[in-house]
Image (cartoon, rainbow, N blue to C red):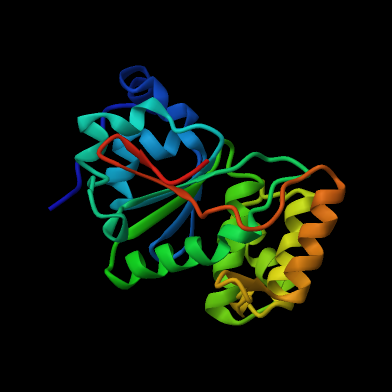
Length: 228
């Protein structure tokens, strides 16, 4: 039986769905996608790639993430341990510490991929912040250094260009063996490994904050959780 050609042109499809022209999404490995913010709320894209979990690395949550249409694809949850949407409030700036969130991001991706759920990691353009996070995840998954892993990601998505700040953080991530903490300090808090502690001091010298900031903000059912 012959296949009937689709009579609808790309121009006609864009006329019916004008947002589609702004979607930018790339499959990095099976089940793991990297993209821009439009891909995070464009329902046909999420459905096409069977994406049911998101990592959003962005300054401010997008209002489209609270709609019933969005939640029909990315299920809401009142249990932070069972969320399908991890939000990391972060700027693409010389003083932003993403390294603090790498373990949370990696654990989230691992949990959903293990459950055979496809995951999209995005920022605004999918060029710096989200590729940094995906590279950190693959470094831990494969046990490889930043140079080879980032080269692989760029090979999949040519526009990837992590900032100098984030490249440095990936180097520290490699140095600490994909774990920035090494136990508890005398006050019952977490004790940072030396390489991460030195990085934070350099960051503070550029006007950044100190360590100890809580992990990513989660949003379930339109409710914000955690600290900014």
